[in-house]
Image 1 (cartoon, helix red, strand yellow):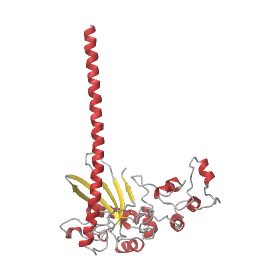
Image 2 (spheres, one colour):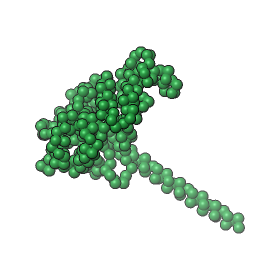
Image 3 (cartoon, helix red, strand yellow):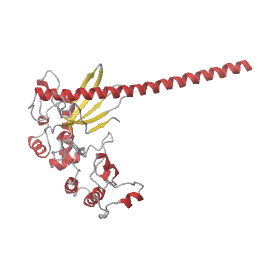
Image 4 (spheres, helix red, strand yellow):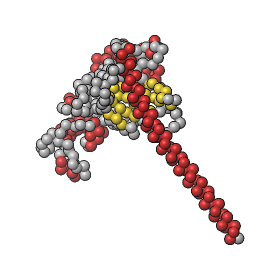
Length: 322
C-alpha cells in the first residue's frame, strides 16, 4: 500500500513539474516574441524614414494629401496621409501608418487660452456649463506654468497640489512634455486619451533645438471629432460622415473628394491642413490577426533628404514603445 502511495505522489509531482514547465515555456516564448517585435519595430522605423526621403525625392510635388491616386503607381507611396501600409520586414509583415506631427490642438506657450476658448464657443449650446469648465481648466494651466504663487479663480497652486499629494507640482514654467497635461485636474474631461492611452488630441510640445510645429494648422487626417467641429465648422452628422470617409481613405485609398460633397471638402480644407509640415509621426504595429505577441511603436521625427541627416544623427520628438 505504501508503495502505491509513493508511486501516486511521484506521478502527481511529475505532472505538476511538467505543467509548470509548459507554463514557463509559454511565458518565455511570449517574452521573446515581444522582444523580437521591438527589434522589428526599430528596424522598420529606420526603413520608413528612408522611404519617406525617397518618396519626396522622386515626387517632390505629389499634390494634395488625400487626393493622390495610388493606383497610378506600380509601387507604394509614403506620405503623411494616414494610409495603412504593410511592409515586409525580412519576412515579417508590419503595418505602418504615417501622419503629420502638426496634429492635435496646440496648447503650448500661451496658445492654450485661444484654443480652449474655441471649445467653449463651439460647445456652449450643446454642453451645459462648458464655459465654466473651460475657464477653470484655463486657470489651472495658467497657475501650472506661471512663476508666481498668486491663485487664479478655480486655479491650483503649490498648496493645492500638496493637498492632492501631487507635490512638487506645479512646474512654474513652460510645459515641456505633452504628458504633463495628465497632471492637471479636469484636463481629461475635455481631452480624452485615444485607444492607445495617448493624448493624440493635443499637439506635441516642440523640444529644445528643433523646428517648432506649434503654429502649423492641425492636420485633417488626425483631427479628432471635436476638432472637426471646431476647425471645419461641422454639425454632428457631418462629422460622422467625414470620419467614415476618412476611414475608407485609410484602408481603401478612395479619394476624399470622391466620397464627400465639394462644399464640405472646401470647409475642411479652409480650416485644416492637407499638406505636410516636414515633421512626421509614425505608428508601427503588427497587422490585425497576426497571431503573434507584439509591441507598438510611435515615433516623431523631422524630415531629412536622401543624403541623410545633416549631422548624421536622427533626432526624435517622440519615441514610445508601450
